[in-house]
Image (cartoon, rainbow, N blue to C red):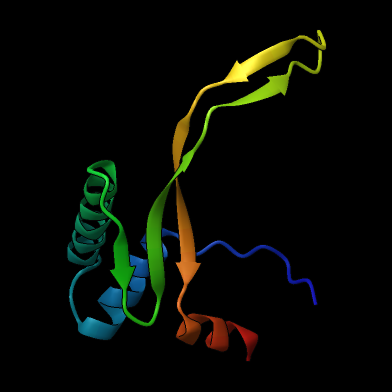
Amino acid sequence: MYKPEIVFTGKDIARTISDTKGITRKQAGEYVDTVFEAMKQELAEGKNISIHGFGRFEQKVRPERGGINPRTKEKVRIPESRTVVFHPAKALKDKISD
């Protein structure tokens, strides 16, 4: 069944940490920012991130490929690129399917 999109932001994460751990929202926000910056840095260095019970963030290389410009119908070369993919852990999949 389709559910409308609900966005849970970094501020929401900080608020949850603040409320459950008894620290200020500013401190919690700094912790959240630190975690996300560390994750970005590790991914930028080509490393994958695994969070037990949550999932894995992995880099994927999209190989160079051909494409077509929809406006001119001209063939174009799309260069190789890197992206991040997320693979949820079984525990997360099970929680979502409840």
